[in-house]
Image (cartoon, rainbow, N blue to C red):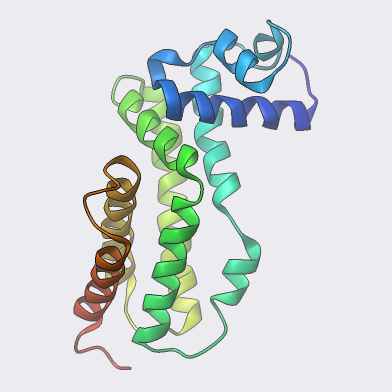
Length: 192
């Protein structure tokens, strides 16, 4: 197997694009090569089989979603409900700005129902994400506990899915109001 990390990342980015556009059934080595603009056979030099490229594409989505500047910024400012809502709006916008990643992840989740190894990878990676968010929130001093964070995570993931798959269902203003209502209701009765 080849080891050029930049080429490998580019192939995984291409796989994410293919998953988002064609679904898991459309993910072939040839489709990845074509999307990446590389000679036929390149992806098969980097990944042993389709299962391997699926697993690594799931990891790559999360690599691309991590933004260290946003993480650092979240630890600044006020520690109130308004700040939680501001951070949730930023999260929705950041994930929605990488629509192929989110849609590819939906495809990977469906595929994971049939592929135990992929299910294990996604379960581990998503658990790490949830645990990171719970720990980050506790460290930040923002209102709300771990359950609040998990409920926000679950609800916002669904809101993002609606935004990307049925963009006409809610207007931008309605989505904004839904995030505000979600934060307000989850943090009601919690210390400011």
